Length: 195
Image (cartoon, rainbow, N blue to C red; front, top):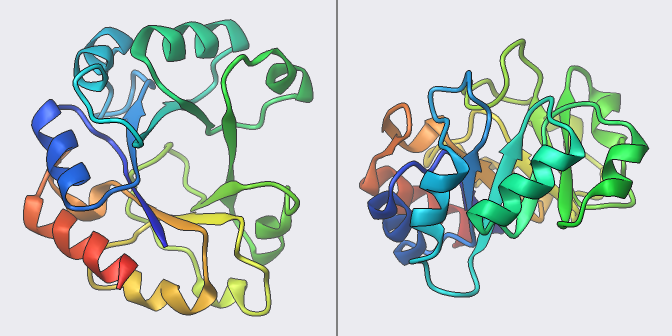
């Protein structure tokens, strides 16, 4: 499974995640989040990173103009859209994007089943809540285009492997504190996801 470490706020954490084998890093461009980073701060990190690592910009309730300009300024390679956006918004984006499904019940995970999407547990706040999804919902579902998020950590990520998800996304499950990653937890998470 591919792995994304989200809520990156420092170059040190970014490099530590990459060296541990992360395929993607997430940068939160949502100001109320304790993991918020400005596009300028993200750019300072991203421009020093090695190639072949996906740089994902996370957005909540933004318009297409903001998404395009922040991604361009930061050097992000993918926009992660954490809100119910109209088709017209996606049509205006200049950057590749991935939709996020905030699943309240089993049938929600079937949305956008013909495209790659991230499935997270629904909660009132956005992202990094540590709330887990019910893995039983994914029984007999083609998970090859799903990136699983929500309440994952080094201990439980192994449980997800039998569903053959495209990838897994973690934030709070590998942190010392908001926006500060725990190297040992990151290393163990990636090792357990990829073994």
